[in-house]
Length: 237
Image 1 (tube, rainbow, N blue to C red):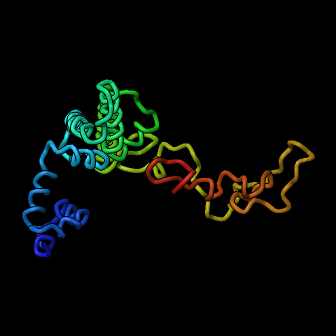
Image 2 (cartoon, one colour):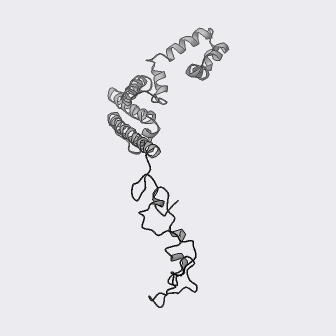
Image 3 (cartoon, rainbow, N blue to C red):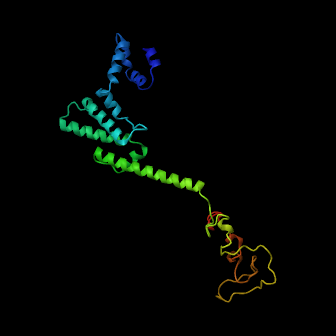
């Protein structure tokens, strides 16, 4: 029996752990072998009842194939857990257990979506799951196309569409370039004649030498002419 435990793996090893009392029989090896053959036989009701609560959808299995496999297990498990039920109650038990197992084992995303808006029958659950899966596949393909376009697409100027430069260096941009040189003789200080109650600068603008505004409001302020190299907006670099 110890050798059998050491050599077995997976669900067979778990069976030996869960049924350790079988080792106390007179001929334990033959008895355990017969019990394992009975347990893992496809139509075994006790095995089907235990597997029904942990069944998961396989990687390459369609939703309809998974639903058929769940119903087959439920129809076999009802012989173990529904012995005292009448035919109508058995049918209701099979439908309920099939629906619960299908929602639980359909997959992480599908399970959460089906649980939040739970269907009443396995047929409705199957139809809704197929629709949701189609939507998720299409959205995944669309996102992949957008990602591929961002990576491989040719970047162009946001203003004129030319691929030779970005929007920050577009010659057609109507934003004035920053002035970093000193005022010359053509820059005459001027005073505003607007609202007399508005605060007036005590010093000329540090960018254009104008008395009409503060440096923070100057159109030649370099901070007001920094654009994104890709899209041309001021919100980011």
